[in-house]
Length: 338
Image (cartoon, rainbow, N blue to C red; front, side, top):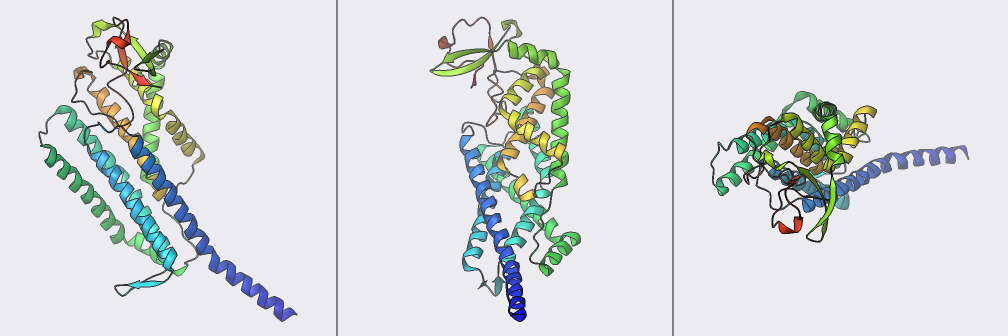
């Protein structure tokens, strides 16, 4: 009886030990699937008439890489143990591939932020005069170069190699990299938003109190009246800052609150989850607002060449008081759909 119990205990322990990786792998599959659905939803909701830029190409590439990761996980989960080109693939490779992706995503925040910022500065100053096809090729090869460079750094770093090697020795554990770059980038943007909001608190309050709800082309809209003598040229950085804050938070307030909660609670989010399309568009809107503010002395709201945001309508925020009826305008200067 004792021997039988010992065998049962041993069998149950082996069963739990072998089933644990399966649970982790299935969880990874569900997480990546949910992330892909979120990416598709975000890409589907964005404005389609925006000008091409670096961030758009990088968002599409990120969604594509997530899809490739899901396909690899699905194939390994289905076949479990198979050989391709003399390379044996097992369930261990699910964790390995996801770890490599986590390290790659974790180190890509700063380069993407910097290149997107340079791209918008050049676009705003209109110093680059490349044709449409040349711009597409430039953005495409820039995105490819970033992924290859970061992946080469990850695979060539001795510390990361030792981490992956240690995971191979204890295959029932699958730790994931938490990006320090995303933490400081999120902290940096939240602090700037907080300082900007405190600085222009009175202007923001006045602006929000002046908001009106009306109907335009059978749609309920919010519009903010302003004096028509401004000639659509921004002359006060502080007043313009309040307008940028209202526009930005009207779209991204839930995401800002989420970032604040993550920072305050010190939630460790794996890099393969944290790097996603909504996060990139949030950074994209922040960069556009920053470029607008630093160049407000030469900003013309009627300029069709301004960088267009897929989610925040920076150009269309404020309507002159001289316009009595919105229905008389074919293309109003300022509408924000509720």
